[in-house]
Image 1: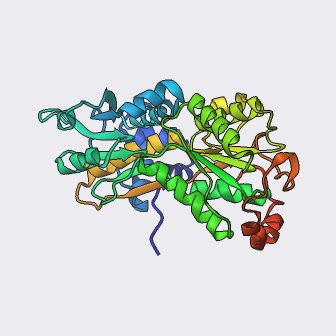
Image 2: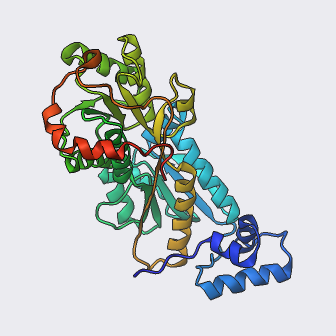
Length: 363
């Protein structure tokens, strides 16, 4: 059985001090008594904690893709990840510099640059990942993964998070769950896989998919309006692969007089603050964005300290924030909801209705 990795929280508990104090000691920052500094380092060595080597004063360069920069002004996922990076870099005494990715990808890695390493945020293609892996400088993928495991990476566990959301909707009695998504990046494909796998496990069809070309609420609203005009209300719930798409779906349902959650439940994916301001407040998968940013800095530190260690793929668990946009499924045939696909759900209906007693915020 693999031994659990020692964390700063473990050191803080053992030494009976705050995590902030442990961070200052490990980063070589002032403001800690010599005897306490010595105690923290002795405990770290005894527990096998990888002490940072010469990280104070080192430069980390964040390379942000075009999609990450657009996101920073639109939905703020990037901003929350960046906040986690800044906090962790400061604790280690490092400097974080942010740059947009240059059109000539190789030019992003300056030959004579004194950077300790690079963080590649939301790369837009495997070609960018290939180019980063081909270089000699340490690179950590953020909100992405390397399919060939040449580079360490950190991202939310997209597949399990989508499965968790789907399972919750099934527990509420929903059998016709529409996936509203933007195709493209592998991380989003993993969300679709989690949705489809959970439906299949319950004997349900994963045949309701609506795709849009951008993370734009208006595009999502237009797609849902068009579907309603084309097919009627052939679903009782929507799982959107982004909060912005979920907000657009709620706009379209409101325009068509469809009650949320009385007739259709809507679940988002991000956990952005603006979801709570919707009417009704948006139920969503909460991604621990600041934790992702902090973990990225730690991965970079580990690569710098031990460049021969094998790459690691870190996936951080998510939870459901259940608010007002999700509720029990309306009876079949009520409020114009189609019976399409109902026969496929029959075998699993009894078991799912028993599971419907659980609710609230899920870990």
